[in-house]
Image (cartoon, rainbow, N blue to C red; front, top):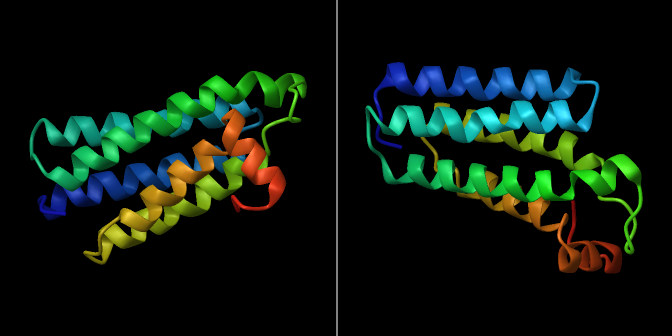
Length: 139
């Protein structure tokens, strides 16, 4: 990622803040709320220092947040034809955010972390949940 060290540090600090607060949040709604800061911060930095990977992070973060928010009612009510969305999605998101923060610090690309986020979010869809229940989509 080609952004200044200062912006890189701000972004990594924000990712870790989000991960920490997702981990300690009491409800899935709070966890989703904190996760939304990822794409928000990426967009703010892009407005000062454009970088294609950062735009990718923003887009993936926004997509993942929207997909998870769509699936939240099935977690809360535990009523869905295929069963509730796996709650461990959030603990996995916390772990992948930590991986992303470390990748950014070490100058590595964030593709693996973003791919994992998308697969976690995909597990909240009808087909994704079906694949999860079949054991094909691993969380």
